[in-house]
Length: 109
Ligand SMILES: [Zn+2]
Image (cartoon, rainbow, N blue to C red; front, side, top):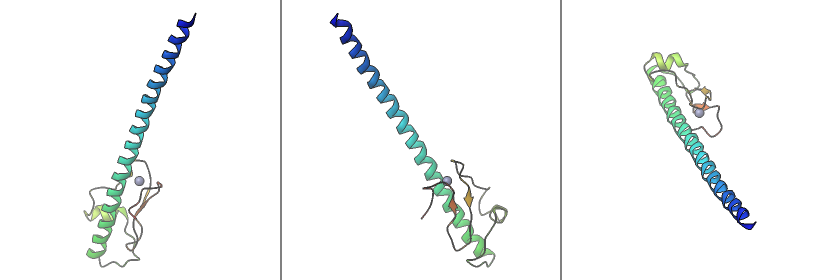
């Protein structure tokens, strides 16, 4: 009568171990994915910042002027309009301020 209980206990331990490993693996994968998306977003925000600075230099703009995507893309300062991989929205902003993403934690500050 006792043997089945031990087998069941072992089975529960193995299942719990596999579940822990599987959950841990998925959790790490999600964290890596989040880190990658945030890193790409920060790189893109820096590209926008640099493109704004060059746009201001080339067009004698002040820190209160705000370029549009067509100013930056049309002037060949960036290849195309950039988008956050996590579907955040970019605000180019004025020349005198940093561009930002609507996703929390995606910033270059
Ligand atoms: Zn973002």
